[in-house]
Image (cartoon, rainbow, N blue to C red; front, side, top):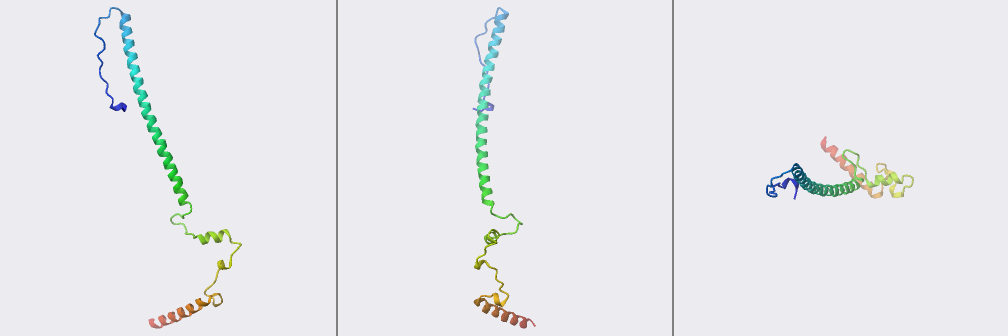
Amino acid sequence: MPFYKRSVSVRRGRAAVPLSELRDVCSLAALTLIRQLAELCGHSLALLGDIEGHVLALGHRAGRLHRRAARLQALLRGRPLRGAPATSNLDVETKQAAHTKLPWQQPVNVFLAAGRPPGMEQLHQEAQLNLQSMLQGTR
């Protein structure tokens, strides 16, 4: 039971016996004081046990929070922060292997006729015709 919920009650000790000597009075007072100190030691031991339980629980919670934070850091390590320029996996690959580029990684300028693939040439011609018709329609 927690200390603040405990109640202290008055004990009716032995019957009141007239004490004839001062030594008997001192002995009775010392005995009563020792009993009270023993009871206080019991309460303090219970308090320390409660505190120890709370400290252990707090240690377990701190450990769980530390593991969660480590997992979150591991998850967020590869993600960009807000406001940071976004990078793709292709950007990372080109930075890592910039000296060896495979043919499919070579940059192709599709705006020059020589750099366009065959299917792209037809799309380019259609786009030019559509642009010309739109420009004539606005005049």
